[in-house]
Length: 303
Image (cartoon, rainbow, N blue to C red; front, side, top):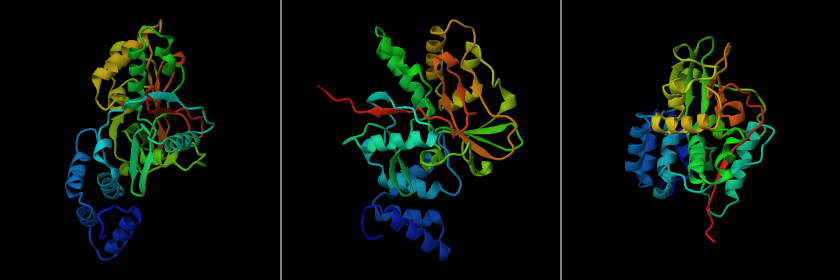
């Protein structure tokens, strides 16, 4: 690659050629990053994906990390989302909802929705589970004297956060940004995505270590490992959201965390947060062939 602009197709070709020559992927990626003037960004991205709440997928991490470093401009590097939250029309399948969301974002001259960099270019991703919770909290706290404060609590919110299950065990992983869900084909109509659990990177938990598939008390919610992992360790956000939910429900228990049981094959499903009528539970047990309901971040247009 002789120019300074990252080209996904040329990068893929370079990886294929160098692989036949026995050149390691990371060495190829570093050379491409250097040619694009993004060596420092690539090196930092490699370090970032090995620590904290960021996890790598085996077999795809180098190309994805390279694309992220070379294609993400500085102004898009922040995780802060500023815009108006819009409930997209419900779709008959999860995959249709993902593509309807992406098409709506592409149709805007300037989209406020968070982008996602794949090895083949830039797209838009559904909000993460945490971002959906942040959206609900933001709307609630920004409309204290308005009926609008609970509008995002009236329908479930799908996300690009996934639950990966290990077959014939009680182990599962929470995958914060699932590339399988973000790049799901529009005609996908299966209940699950088949994955290799051991090659799927995420926060690993065990169903036996906490209460699952039952409603929780406020104290149980506050320390629940799966709720905390899905919210990327943000205990303050979890407590704030819990207090809002219980303040609007006249009951002692809510916010359960639902999982599949009796897993016969490694698989991946989407994680969503339900509406208040269904106790605002978190669920990673539904079929991907079911309905889709997504939030889109639209720009705020000044009058």
